[in-house]
Length: 241
Image 1: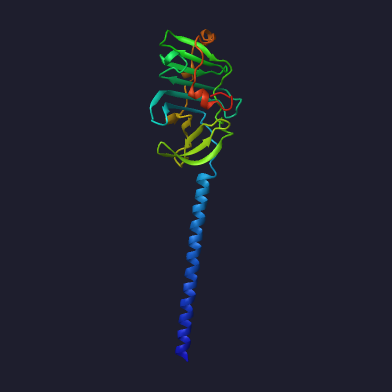
Image 2: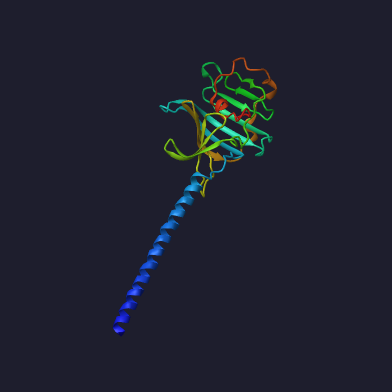
């Protein structure tokens, strides 16, 4: 009788261990699944609305997105004096081919000054300086506050967070935030072309970068404003660049 009871006890103990092992496996799978779902939600469903750094600079390219042909290039300098839409801000865009000058035949700087006007300044072209747009300011850091999140998308072989620039149809791409780096501008794409920022550097911008002979630049430019990707894409909405 004792041997039978011992055998029954051993079998019951083995069965009990199997049940516990099975339960632990199920809990492990459930936990792993929950972790994966949580990570997926955090990476695709909870991206913060884009907010530009207050001061940064970057080289930029303007490209044809179908064949990657380079259409224009230059350097971008940005300085906002606060995140609020009413805060002062200045922007300088250096263009290798001035998009408003006939045939883009000169290098120029487009300066969005603190007086809320936009100027073209070309020191190497007989010190050309004139007002291109009156009442057009640089965009605030929160210019994408009405954008719709599209999820993680590949742009030029890089994983990015993508946003629809409402009410426009352009799509804004920014780098994915990591422990070592904040989210930074990558590109603004639409209509078969894209503005791409290369190696954005978040750093103080000297006030002298935005200097121009303001007193002699108050006349409207003798040439009519032409299509400009920055003005077309970065106006949000009618706020500036």
